[in-house]
Length: 77
Image (cartoon, rainbow, N blue to C red; front, side, top):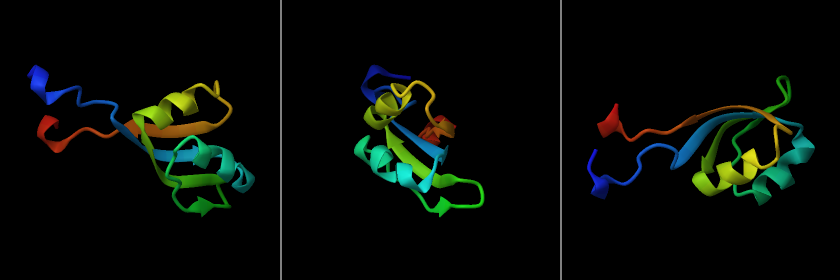
């Protein structure tokens, strides 16, 4: 990787966040783009988080369970 490519990992994250529907406001205030709420599993599906939103989410100290993965640009796959 060349310096001009920047840091390709961790610029955006995608995945599911396990929370109650009432937690929507708190999660959106962190800058998280929430996906559809699945009431059966009590989770927001296919959420998108910027690096800044991920930092805020991590600062909650495990308040919510999540299955999030960094998005890697296709040229690095």
